[in-house]
Amino acid sequence: MKAALDAAEGHSPLASIIAGIFLLSVSGTVQLMQSWNSGSEFATTDMLTSAWNFLAGTILPEAAGLAIVGAILNYARHRPFMPLVGSGLAFLSVSGIWKLIQAMAGG
Amino acid sequence: MNFTSGLLNLTNWLGNVIMPTMAGLFAAAAIYRFSKGQPCSNLGQAALASLMCSGLLRVMESFSNQAAWNNPDRYWISVLTLVNWVGNVLLPLYGAGQVVLAVAHFTGLLERMTIGEAWVRNLISAMCCFGLSGLLRLGEFWVQHGTAGVR
Image (cartoon, rainbow over all chains, first blue to last red; front, side, top):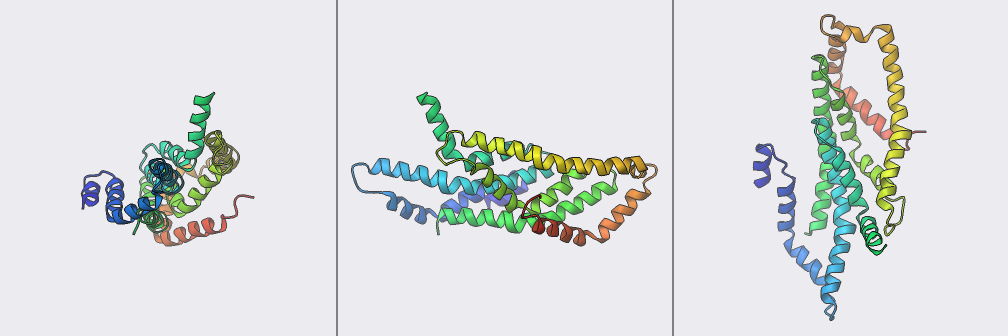
């Protein structure tokens, strides 16, 4: 409903659609996070590490596909599309960017 | 039901169902703007890009897979590969198109597309209007037969 209203106002409905998918899959997300819980004294660290891996290895590469779709639509509408191309590449190499930041901070 | 498969299905639906359908709309808009003598190249290119949405994602994946996942130079190498691809693949193709345009300009064909003597533009627009589905099939043929890359 919110996505349809957003689109009717000329805004992007994507954020509302993704929020809708997230709300519909809350139970699955809870089960996923329970599977990450090791129950040990390092449970919080394990959870954060698993969440980071899930974000960098699963969610962001899928977001790269959405970035490509957005880039094509922006190109057709004479709107800036290079930021979406650059962020799509960044989504696909986010772990490398993290290693780059670590190398910069360590150097 | 989980968030990953929901997002994956959304991406697949947008890239493999909606965008190829939108290609027809982009092509129709390109023909309309061409018939009015307005810039239409971005709409034509967007129609072709809509047909190869998943292929463009595969291209970006291949750009970002040039280095290991924990390589600090991974993003730089991705951008470098993008620049190489633009410089060594896209620009030669664009240059070939410019040669064709040069010949068309030299023969005076494009002069008949401006306002005042627009019969060639109207004729081409009419042909495109009558054959839009054929043009889309032609674009799909190019995309399907271009999966092996430029040789």
